Every structure is written in C-alpha cells, then in structure tokens.
Image (cartoon, rainbow, N blue to C red; front, side, top):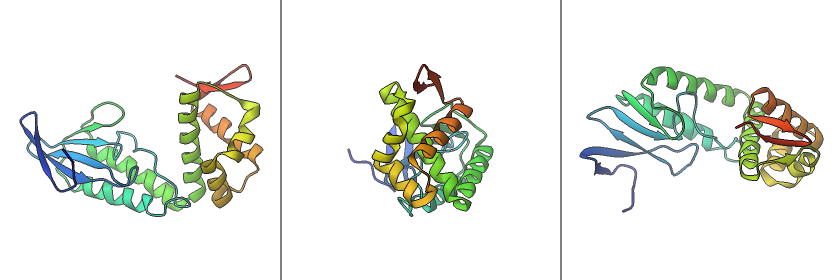
Length: 187
C-alpha cells in the first residue's frame, strides 16, 4: 500500500488523513484522525521542537516548508500529538509556540541554524560510532561534506575552531561527555 498526501486510511477502526508535512523530510506525512483530534506527527512536531531541518545553505526550501507544515498543523483541531520522539502530549499550542520560536530563530540567524545542524549531525555520528577521538575531530569536520559545506557557506571557521566549538556546545548541552581522549554520547 502506498501512502499519499490527501488520501485516507482506516487503521484500528479509525479514519486517518494523510497530510504532507515537508521540512525535516521533504516527503514526510503526518496522520490525523479528526474524530478524536489525534495527530501522529513524526518529526514534524515534538513537544519541544521538531526534527533536524537542513540549513538554507544546503536546502533553501526546507525551512519555509517547515513553517508551512507548522501552519498546517496549527490549522487542525488537534487535541493529542503522538510525536516521532518523546512522550505523547496535549498542550499543542505551547508546542507550536516553541516550534515557531525555533523556526524564527533559524530564519533570523543562518549561523545559529548551521551550528544546530552540525551539532545534530555530530551527535548522531557519535551514537553510531560510540566514540571519536577529540584530536581527530578537526580532520573529520574538514573531510565530511556536510561539515565542510556548511562551514564554507556560513560559519567560515578553521576546522580546529569548528571542532572545538561543536565539542564545547555539545558538552554544555550535556549531549556528549569526554572519556579519556574521546568524545562519547551522553546516554
């Protein structure tokens, strides 16, 4: 079965509308049950934000698509959100307010969005690798495309300064920790 925006499916005796939700993933869908006001939002809306959105220097359409998706969700009579990450929540207005604030901050500051994107990418890389030697990070950010491309387009830092900034900000956010000479995920 192929799921397409605008279609309707019945699952668990409930009718679900498939709605386009580009931004984090330009082909993403959310599922909405109007009878109970349930939204399965995936990465389009979390209680405290939404999934990683590619910075404008890489994909100029992603951030405007994210805003349009938030506007679409804001127009639905949602009472309960089942996000792709985190707990189910009911304070949809507050979640949308936080998501809009994040979007506004990214729209106003390309460097902030680029730093956020690179911290997310590095965190996921660490989850997959389990550890990275801190001394190897400058060469890593110089070699891997997304770090190099965003740095060249927006941040314009040396690889050493970029690696140092990423480590410092991830440590401050408690997303990582240092074990010996390695950076490891906090969890």
